[in-house]
Picture 1 (cartoon, rainbow, N blue to C red):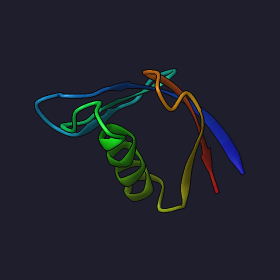
Picture 2: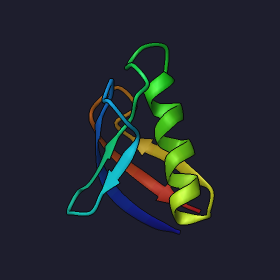
Picture 3: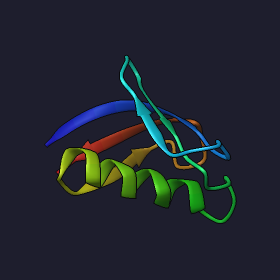
Length: 68
């Protein structure tokens, strides 16, 4: 299991991942009712081809993600 830091920008024009430290993730979903978190998990699952879990920062833009 690997842990990475990400910074999320909800309500963006398009879904994208920008390489860097931390990894920047832009999602179309709004930061309401867990929609942005679900979008982040979906994008990262596709990107890493593995299961993803948010372990810290569920209500913050800065998150710690665990790749399972």
